[in-house]
Length: 209
Image 1 (cartoon, one colour):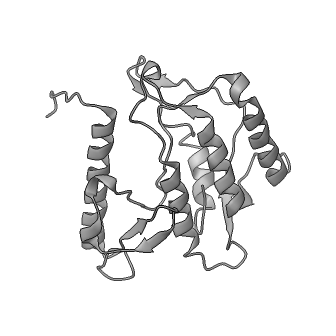
Image 2 (tube, rainbow, N blue to C red):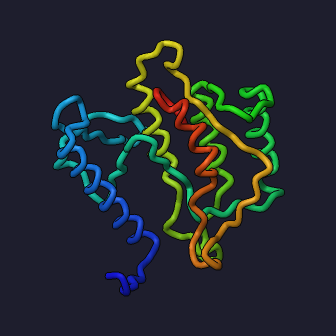
């Protein structure tokens, strides 16, 4: 395997990746008993409206699973933004919301109403496009599931001051190439591992994005 190359489509790659993550998390859960304080594992499903509800494991397609692990990230990867003239008003609205919520201070995470975060996710997704010329067909961001994950995590918040809230950590004036490894793969780490992730994890005891 060390010298084997496997060529496939983005859709199949993501399906295999999801299966691997699910299998690894499931094995870890059974070995450590980290769910529900015992050896059980929680299965939930999202309906057409994006609402999370418990379900039986036999209802789940492994290739359609999303594994939620502590401090894991769910990022849109490989996206291309639409022409600036088409999204200028949308990005201006995103900037307005973030500036208002943070009071213009982006050095530390700030709290936002969860419904406002859902609205931001919708706005951000509306600026993306996936076409053959961008080499990103099959990499579409599942933003509906992303919001469903936030809804699921919100349901477990015990701190009344954080109920209905989500921490947001935004950075500006970043310059990140769309591709890495000499243009062979898409960039998948918009944050700085030494600084950004440490700050995000410091507030991720209850809820963070």
